[in-house]
Length: 176
Image (tube, rainbow, N blue to C red; front, top):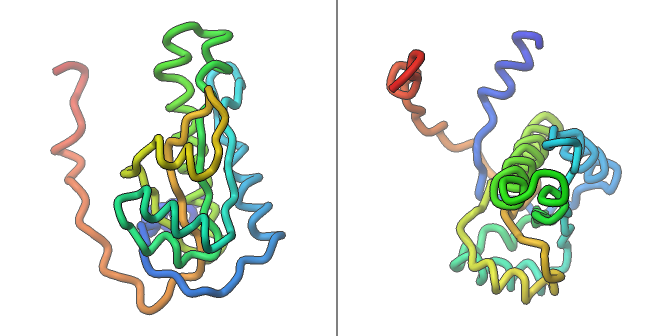
């Protein structure tokens, strides 16, 4: 990994202001292809992504996310879902309760990085009423929404990057 790539990763941040400028389908496909290159336990790939572009559904998702209306202003919203049974088929309960969520988190991070590298902005939204999102998107039984990702061009100036915890405060050497 080049130093430039590391710097780019370190500069990624959550953005909550989007212009209405549409995202070309070719870019959306590249973002998703990059997302789907994420690792998954046993290569099970226990995920589905719902691409939402209609304003009515984006408005309903914003309500389901506790009124986070900024997400409805993005031209595209991805709802990343886990399919726990696909992991459980190979790994049992641990696959169902843990691996499927870890795998979708890796997918989300890949999407966020692809969005950033391609010059767009996004924000990982995990605060939402899961049953409302299931209802709004008619999500089938057995599929669990785990993240909402609004994607678009950032509107206005980039906000100051929030402070991060010091490495010395979070690293534990060998044992607690």
